[in-house]
Length: 196
Image (cartoon, helix red, strand yellow):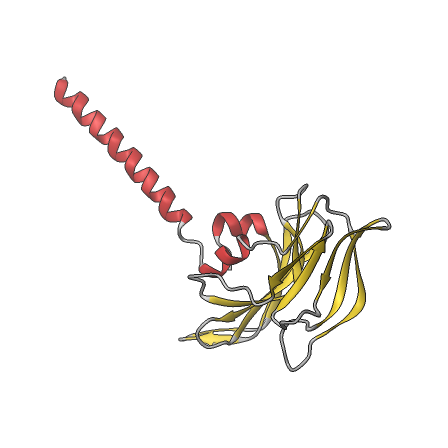
């Protein structure tokens, strides 16, 4: 009887360990781009979704840059200006954010240590306190080593929802090829399952 109890306890312990290991492995199977998309950080933080975005000075990309080098975006609620993003800074790779009377700069060429991608913010990523998702913004992803364009992610127009749109060029890797395309996807799915 003692041997049976020991065997049962050992099997239970082994089952818990293997279940935990499987769960951990599946969480780590998210591909690198999915991980990047699901964990992007916002450039602009507002209290509520449902704000209005107004381009008050034309957005211009000069000298073949992927990001804007001139222009201004205002984020408003009614007539109240909540934040202003100005692309006319001393450094073309930065934009200034004016919010609550405080001016700060953020990098348009997002650099994240250990990332496989170079990223360029086309329109600032906006997060609101009343939403679990980035609600607006556009970011382009490039291969870190080759500089090849990989995809554009558009997080939407300020509405609090889980949806974003991925656009990618035709390409190939090894014996695998794919056509250019666009797909609207759930950020929840990408966070949990690593969709491509």
